[in-house]
Length: 82
Image (cartoon, rainbow, N blue to C red; front, side, top):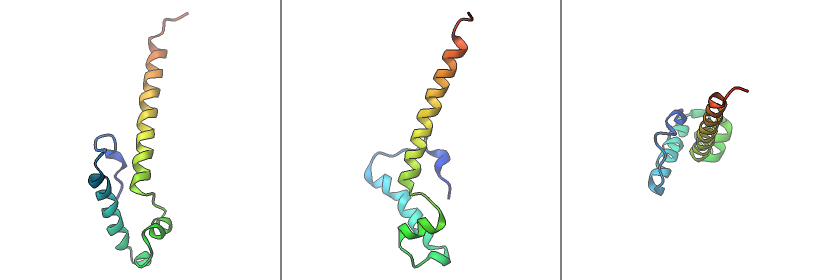
């Protein structure tokens, strides 16, 4: 059920496309018999899962960090030796 690895490749901006993965997660969490009759938020809490929106936001933050770190690392590598 891990979708975070494709975050930088697929990041929708249309509302319909944003809600579709969340609907899939809602259906999949209902398949877990021990939490089947709980609300969606309660199922996420009991299964220790973040919402798709939260995972997408975390992925965006990680991508920005990686790009910034790579840029800073390149600056250090390219700077002249003193």
